Image (cartoon, rainbow, N blue to C red; front, side, top):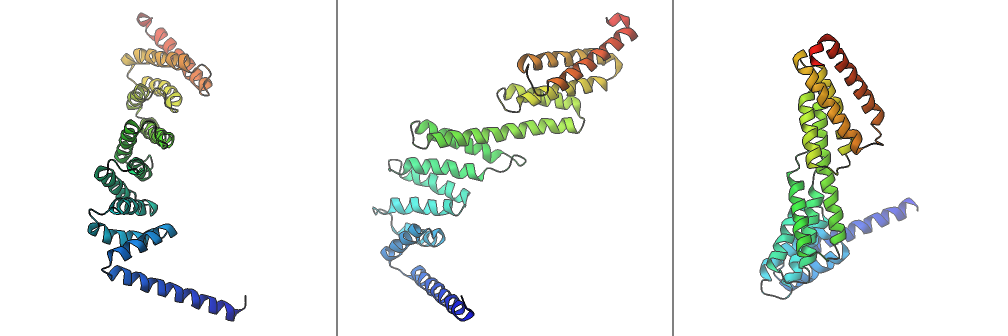
Length: 274
């Protein structure tokens, strides 16, 4: 394309854009509710959710009692969702199904409210309060619509969020281990294993508890070492009973061997403990 034709195309695009903006501004200033609503639907169908949102926000308060009000409110909520304004869409979808509980769109609105909260859930390193809220919302949806067409996706979202909480809890425990706060690490890993027995991180947590207890015993005062090494043996036994083919088995066996060696030293040093 030569420079002259390219210039003409660019100018035409700018003219179309300017005309479109001008027409939209006129719509915003118009007092014609039906005209605004029709234009909002047209923008919505084209995927121009920003402009659809602006017009729907203006006409919704003026459509109370009208048949179109229900559709307008659902679309308004969805314009926020499509623009990734998830906290706003969550609020608007909840408002929708609380306002129109018998609507044919109530089920989808409740699902999208839960999905909005799901999408707003932060990375595991951050505070997970909103993740818990999202999981509660998903559960509420599944209780109300157990046979919903969205149930499979809702269950998948719940599992994803649950795994994120597991990872948050596991990493918090592992942080104690990395910082060499072994006593705190043992407590944290024990709590994690009790609260998350089927977590994908349970195997590693079980192994790290063995190692943390061994290291805690190693750094303990002599009078406390024997009982703490014995506790490391107990944790090792629990680990191999549950994970006999673990990828951490060789490392765990080495910790166990070191623990037994330390116990033998204690017996030789203090025969009364044998």
